[in-house]
Image 1 (cartoon, helix red, strand yellow):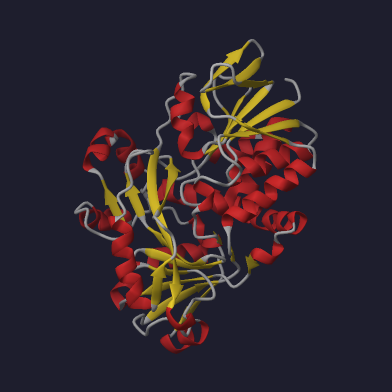
Image 2: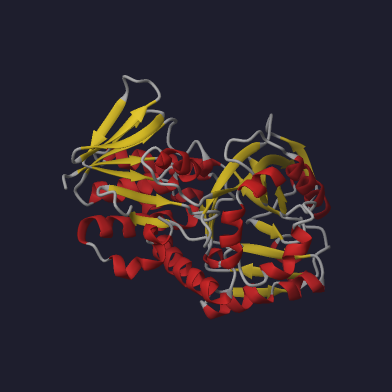
Amino acid sequence: MGNHVIVLGAGIVGVCCALELRRRGMTVTLVDRQEPGMETSMGNAGVLARSSLMPFNHPGLWGQLPRLLKNDTVQFRYRWQYLAANLGWATRFLASARASVFQETARALDGLIRLSAPEHIKLLDESGARHRLRDTGWIFLYRSEAAWQAGALARRTFAQYEVPTRELAPAELAGLEPALSPIFPRALWIQGSYSVDDPHEVVAAYADLFRREGGAFQRLTASAIRRDGSRWTVQGTNASESVSADRLVVALGPWSKALLKTTGIDLPMAFERGYHMHYSGREGARVTRPVYDTGGGYVLSPMARGLRLSTGVELDACDAPARPVQLDLAEQRAREALPLGERLDAAAWLGRRPTLPDSRPMIGEAPRHPGLWLALGHQHIGFSTAPGTAKILAELMRSGGADRHRAFRPGRFI
């Protein structure tokens, strides 16, 4: 096939893919309806963590399910009409919580995260955004001994994959994060991990680097994709707008599902939505690294704009109206842990985490669609895994090697 590639989607995954393909000699046009990093990539907790190898659908999920299905926890909410309409996805998601699939997923995600971390460091240096990086890891907080025991599977998995951690007694936690209230008898410091103080600015810096290295960016709202002979065309909502190339990479995150339907592909994708809000800290109170309150159901991250409170999971349609009750509940729990000040945003931010049944992304060429490549479905960890995704995609496009990356093959669901 020819050398011109469209990368559709300018979030962290799409930008990294576009930059990597450009560096391998391809002519690349990055396409999105907004400027880079303005959608899902804007609102995450800013964590680049080895611990993200632990998927939500792990064997311990079965024991948690009766509580979660009551639909009143801070960690997990759902709209029953959406869940009823997506029972097929839910069944496959739960089936992937069995031990054999869980181990395959953890192994695959661990490799992807290990591949991504050094590439992030290089890109931060090359893009001039290294000042946004912290290498202080992040901390899991536990409100009771029972909660600590419930996290035993995660700790065993971290040990199995050599994720560096350190258990913290209350006094040690207070030494690291003195602003936290003394309500956490147990804590786990995830070391060897990083965080950034503005995910959007990191994506924007990578996109500027892509442009400086000869890549092109085009604003276009995609309504359909089609194959015209040997080329792929992205059709805009305006009938007069389209862009074509020899190959097309779909990296549209949650919006990939609707767009791929226009070419006959029906992805088994659901949307783990989440909210965030920024806060001041009373009398300057803040944390110095992200903290995950496992009982409170939120992550609190120090950002350039203030303390960012990010919520857990809300299962609902991609573009359903916001229901920020989950954020309100998480804020109540966060105020127990740290003296938050006022809200700094006019409204809660809403993001969508695109999740496939086995919690692994698709990376590779779509079956029976030559020239159509997929880099999507990264659920909660697109920020941690984007550079590695780009490396794998570029390798597959240039020289094959699909057997080495079978865990991410699109053919497992297409």
